Image (tube, rainbow, N blue to C red; front, side, top):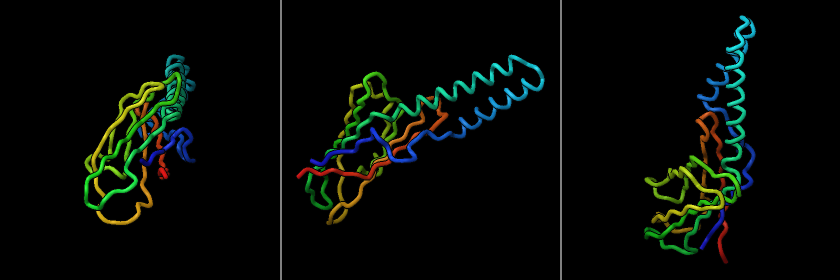
Length: 171
């Protein structure tokens, strides 16, 4: 069996990116702080600062959500072309104190209808496992297969995405 996508250390560019919703909230918060400062409205300044604090805490949560995840793909070492074979996809959360939420997986080895998988919740020190059946269209060596994991947790303000193309095969 072949194994091994380790997402605990993501590649560069795997930091949370502000979504359109997050950008709108950031712009609104800055406008509230500025307008409250100009017109002397303390309540407006407080609302803007509270929103900025919310954005910062959401960034921290988004940063921690995908860290500590380990994705394992098990498949046979040898398969025949145009014949079905099983794939087991396992998501393991190695974090001791924080669960992971709203995880989307896209595996290029899976059939087209099952490429976009969703895991709403993976407990800390827990795992989730899915089994699929797929086939390879022609003979040859499978050189590259990718797995993309992303999340918009919390509130959809940030999108965190990690991509891996490593496949460890057993001897």
